[in-house]
Image 1 (spheres, rainbow, N blue to C red):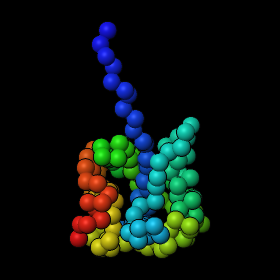
Image 2: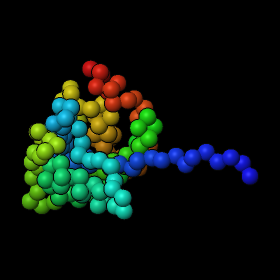
Image 3: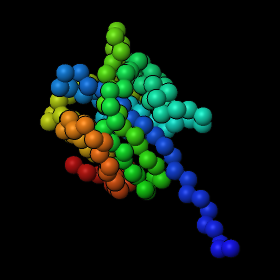
Image 4: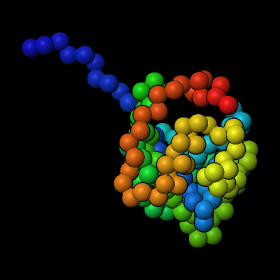
Length: 150
């Protein structure tokens, strides 16, 4: 019998790329001031769909409909895997601010704010490609490194 290393523990997270026409919804985080996509980690016993819906409600007050999987993003430094989905707003839903979000806005993929978190910018650009197959991408920079990027 060989010595077993402790099992790797990874957090599973999800993010929503909400599309309206050719614009994408970003939310400015109150804690760091950067624009990002709505989303976060799944809670114990929660499905991906339920977690994504909960995060959208908590952060920007909307109900969403998943259209397709955009990509699976490995973040080894944070021991996290992020499932990113292209979504649409449910009829009658309009985004608002919250305790976590100070501002929301719609942006074209080629006109995202300069202070968009780089990993989230990449995910929006991946969605804008419009390919049917999900993208597999490693996002290996740390959050601190991301915040230093121009």
